[in-house]
Length: 73
Image 1 (tube, one colour):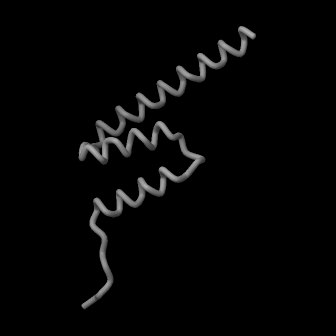
Image 2 (cartoon, rainbow, N blue to C red):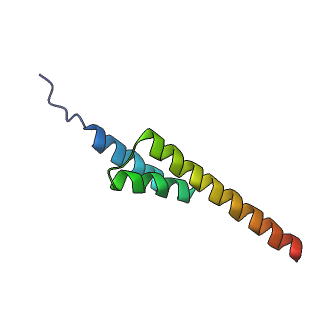
């Protein structure tokens, strides 16, 4: 019989999301969206895809706004 500690799926996901939150190369809003779903115990494929799409749209909107501000200068 093995004596190693086998992690549960929630433990693996939590550790993964914690590691992603520390990665400065990743989009913070995307990581926050996934983490929020996980914390709310609402992480499903459909909801994840919706949250990621919302984060993508917000990033695009912010990019357009910053481009318009730069062109106004």
